[in-house]
Image: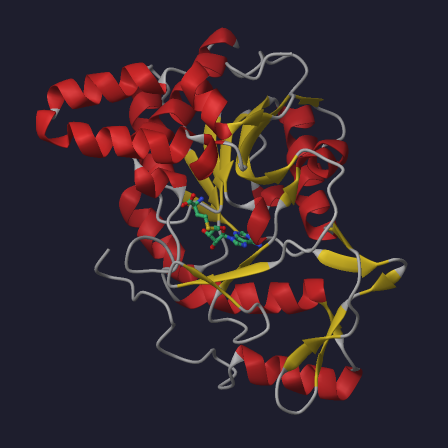
Length: 339
Ligand code: SAH
């Protein structure tokens, strides 16, 4: 990635003020802002102007660890498409494609299986759109899920929902972010419960599209399958955790995804069970894929094994990351996510 600067971003936003100043002025004028508003403002700035991914950036995602990840997602989508009768109007779609790595790896497998459909990305960051257009020439861009074309979707979303804003609640009181003159501070502390109207709206829009036009969606993210409470808002900068209130817009703000809430919001389509990323990738044959890759690249055998362990081992990404599939009721279940 030579054409995009790693974070922190080199230039202030168009307003001429940093997001920190913007939030301060907003709090001075209207009082403390919700955690969701704070997170949305910080992330909009963060993703808009730089490339946060990879070794030089702030964090590394599964598709950046190994091509095996995107290849297996692509194989699962191609398999569902084949069992649906290979509809020629289906399109590959992705939410928040990052550098476009997952899409490029998935599409290589899907093209090999005969899929010839168009590619549609939902992405708001101009900097990342640039990278995606290079990784996947011909991709079309959209700001919102609702703008995807009225076609059956073969959709992937990896680490998209965790970047969408969460609200935090202590009892019935919404937790807000204030500014005391020297820095940002939370208005209340206590036992925290998180909700996310922004995620619910995205899941509902995706489900509505699938119910109307057909297709399947694979959503992968870190989080829990339901019932948990607690503060999961975190900031990651330079591959280390940092204070979410320290420098809004300069670190990646995420919160764990509540998969039960996502499933509830996906009204109108069939929703799979939730499976851990490690067991899903093993079921899909990452072992065989790793052996085949190593046979062709003997010098890479160690690295390929290490990547597989990083993606699948319970102590690494294998258990914290989870997979869920949404689909039109008449479409087949995604492999490894059958009822
Ligand atoms: N899927 C990629 C990138 C994950 S980072 C990977 O696995 O490597 C989150 C991605 O979602 C980035 O591409 C970011 O720009 C995008 N994004 C974040 N909030 C968004 C929003 N509200 N609408 C559309 N895209 C968003």
